[in-house]
Image 1 (tube, rainbow, N blue to C red):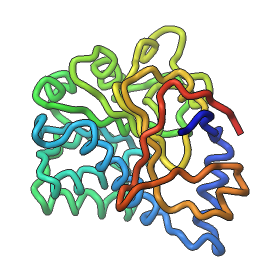
Image 2 (cartoon, rainbow, N blue to C red; image 1 turned 135 degrees about the vertical axis):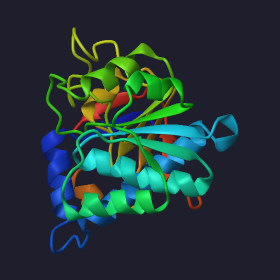
Image 3 (cartoon, rainbow, N blue to C red; image 1 turned 180 degrees about the vertical axis):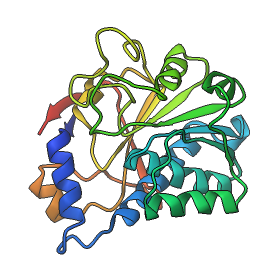
Image 4 (cartoon, rainbow, N blue to C red; image 1 turned 90 degrees about the vertical axis):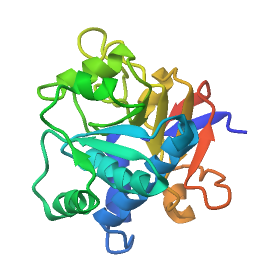
Length: 244
């Protein structure tokens, strides 16, 4: 039973990614993104199986967090969901362009023209993959509308790594867009971030079954006890948080 959740601040999280993608680490960015997106898709399946509604709206930002959302959309399609991707600022880099081509080849819908509010009303679950741990407030266009809609609670939301608009260490802002945003579900990738101490949703998962003991020891992390072929582990929402 997890009693203390060790968390990584933005610099430590960036350093860990750097170690994984170093010559000795051996991972590439697209490998880590694939593993992260697979974890996100499994979290969706856990909290909202297709029998509960197949329509999933993935709100993807321009960074790696958005890439995780694009990967998750592909996996969700093959699980039997009907994903729709909201990607208002596509990243023009080979990895991201490849992910978009993969989805379009599967005829997965991209909708950047409709109001996010209308897209949300026509879905069963929203995946918040707008911003990752490097985000710094405030929220700017064109993402402000999406944050407002998710904040309203019109549909359940699964946030990827950190709830968008939250400060990675301090949590939600005191006022303005996102100040009352509380996603229903959260999946932390590789390790939880310090703002998880402010999370009061229904379920919290750790995802990313690729961390070796040597790297975990370097960053004083405990590797979760993954079961079977699962890429995610549920941890208590009210667990004590320790920042490393």
